[in-house]
Image 1 (cartoon, one colour):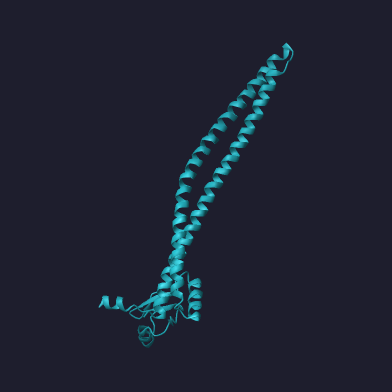
Image 2 (tube, rainbow, N blue to C red; image 1 turned 180 degrees about the vertical axis):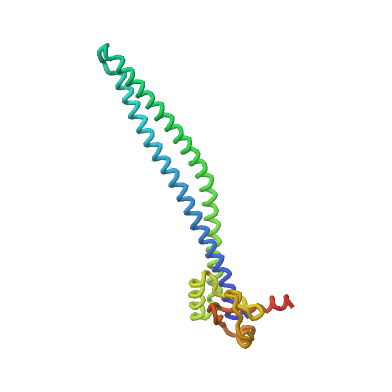
Length: 210
């Protein structure tokens, strides 16, 4: 029958996996949001460029339609050339923005699709692991479970650590020999006097090293 520390060690393996996958999901979702924002920003730039082009095109048309006196023709031609240059510049700017927008959309669709698949897969794994965790914690003492969760939260996701050759693998501090003997019995959950993590003795590892 699994002892309380055995159960806690197994719960921690699942908790660490859930923690890592949850972080991966958040990062993937953040990346999708960043991709969508980049496309929206480029779309807004394209809309502004189209508006700018429409404005200079309208001015070009107005110049052509103005009926002025013959002696003013030279001035009008100079102004018309200036407007035509503005139209060309605005058109070139719009083409560049549209090309970048097309590239961003294609990249977003491909990467976002892959990221959403990853999110869906990880979310499914997280749900299954939570189910297994729920079954494990049913065998834990309530106070012990709460203490474990508090240490797990405060110690960066590491509440249960092995003790090897009398040394805590969490803080690398040696424990007194008498305490080490008590830990090896696995009769109760003992905290490291230094880092306050729960110490776990793995007899199978000790036997393998002999």
